[in-house]
Length: 67
Image (cartoon, rainbow, N blue to C red):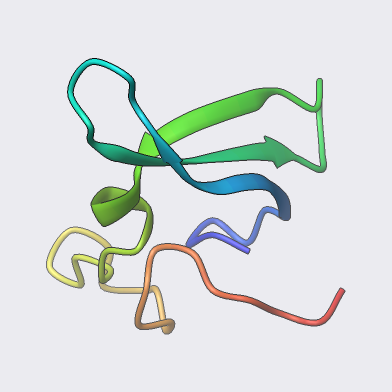
């Protein structure tokens, strides 16, 4: 679940970019059009910016939750 309370499924993590050697996380939305997204791993694992999102209770941008 992300900070907007949407559910996602991790498809592959970590995934390494062949040119930059940077690590990414590939994940799929479990709502709407079920889009597939790719985000840098450090951003995927980052803490919530509570100044920008003061109403959010969770510590990290994405957290595992029972569905």
